[in-house]
Amino acid sequence: MANKILQNLFLWGGLSEAETQKCLGELNPPRTYEKGDIVYSERDFPRAFAVVLSGKVAVRAHNGAVVRTLEKGGIFGVTALFGSSRYATTISVISRAKLQFIEEEPLQKWMEQYPAISMNYIRFLQQRILYLNDKIRLYTEDSAEDRLMGYIRAHTAPDGEILFPDGLAETARELNIGRTSLYRTLDTLAEKNIIKKVNQKWFREVSL
Image (cartoon, rainbow, N blue to C red; front, side, top):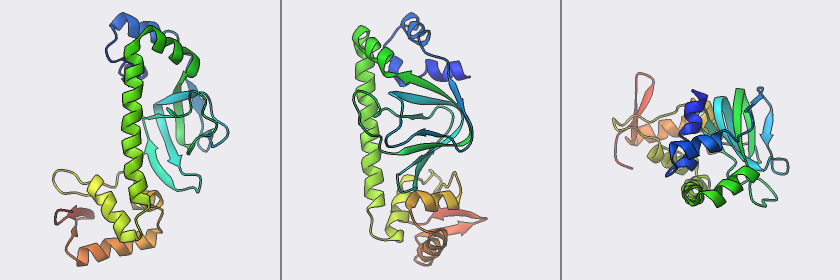
């Protein structure tokens, strides 16, 4: 399974199977981290990005708020390479995790050998910038209601169910609001007929 995750890594688009296998063969072995370990911090981080092969990690702002969680196949650290003097978030382990690091030195060599890898890396960074811009807009909303409505817009399934994959407590931390405030805001939106609760699940009532 781990090998399949790495074979499908975004870097290899446009490469032949032989070229992909050659690059994979140059990787160092994955590393295992235990719950509570800090993998990246503002001033202490490897010159590498990481792929989660198993386990779960949290991406936190430096004030402790959870920005997102990553599980198998998740990627973090792409801004830690090529001269970065600080890292924008803290990466901590939620459950025992095996991580594959893609170090700067081999990545730079591959970029020189295979121009497609450079383009794939740039495209991935562009996607991350768009994602972070959306997060910034969410975190700078003035009220808990505005933040929650922004979350709902981004996390509603086709059938209208509002998704809280890590639970309401984790969502409250992600939105940097209190759990009680989150519950109160959910009730307020329900009173306004914007959302409704059915069998312990929340659904969107109207288009937001």
